[in-house]
Length: 384
Image (cartoon, rainbow, N blue to C red):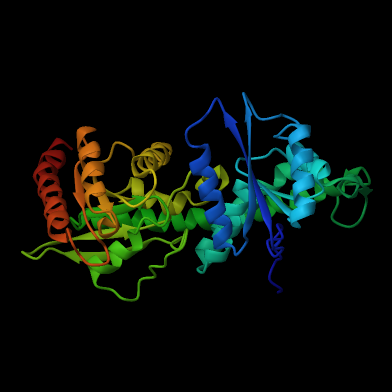
């Protein structure tokens, strides 16, 4: 049986891009978010020729930016030979279609770019299924905007009569495939849940690494576990699958530490939904190690993004230790960030995942949580 073709063609790689954002009421994170978008495109090998920001109260409902700004983008694109316009937000099918007509460019939105990276990073069968499901969820609302071809009626074998449009047939096909993938991922979810329950019964203490993408979570797991086989690349979303390793304390005892997909601003809801089975490893943990890149432009702001995502997963109230990583790059700046975090009531440890600096303090903090967890367990069991 031939491998089913992906419904979204991610093979097209325009060589030059213009990125575009809307600054609503002088939002502080507009520039930071555009910086991220440029970095996302760099991870796909696409250079950015220009950044365009339009100040508006709300994005234009018809074309995201106004027609005048779209004309400016078109003029610059022709001079710079840029063929791709990437919008730093989620576009409706109408906005995308209108913007393509106004600029005569290929138009992507932030969700499409992130999914494109996820697809290139997906290596296991489970990760590929999750990305495929997210792509279908992204594509279905766009089908109506595909023009006349999708509006043609047909009455061939397998259709529901002569009045059924190609759009309806295609949507039914995608929905069948989505149902099949969802069923397979539900089975994965059940297996993960069974594993977590067995660990609980065995008394295993579990911690989960969470944080912004490329904050050093995989490097931290690799160093703590001394497992050289763990992939720790300096790239966005290098980890899409859950990796679990046993970490031993120097004075006896151990805990299980898991690493999973990183977060980012404006993470497409389709991906969060599709990766729900994987991300439940986070909500099922006894402790979160929230890893922050201390060398980032806005480390505390990034932490807030992570906390918002954890809230969606109903994991924001779990015990946590903030791990301020990459202190080898920041020096005294890391001390000020740590002070700010501690002032917010966050238990904070400074480390360098590459050199192991701060590991002793980190492991001591984790062990303290394991002991507190063990002390509370008999009471919980007795209450039952």
